[in-house]
Image (cartoon, rainbow, N blue to C red; front, side):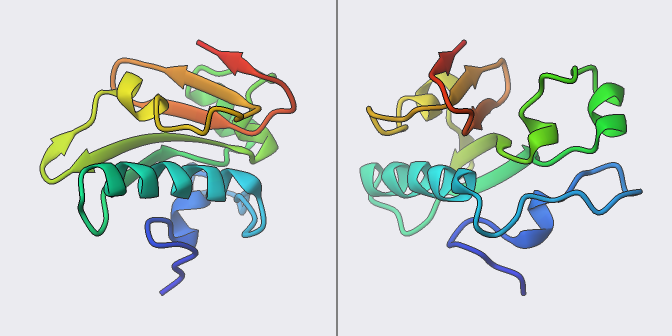
Length: 127
């Protein structure tokens, strides 16, 4: 089926352009970071599993530009995910999702209106 973790499948990590083979590789740390956030939220709400929607993961340069991003994007480095998390039918507010990162997380975390961005750049970045 392609499941990598309890919440993440391989097909969700591919560029959504439909014309390339760019994907986040199975060993990339971003997978474990996002799964850890899912697990901590599930534990907090005492549920077996939350629903994770990955709205964007890896992107080829062309798709990255098409969605309005730039060459500094972590998505083209295949180490970023934009996610939505649902507990039951309710989407968690993006700012609350970001609160479930480990305190010692070194990387990027961005809160947007409808999703949360995480990446594994080699420095702390918050927005």
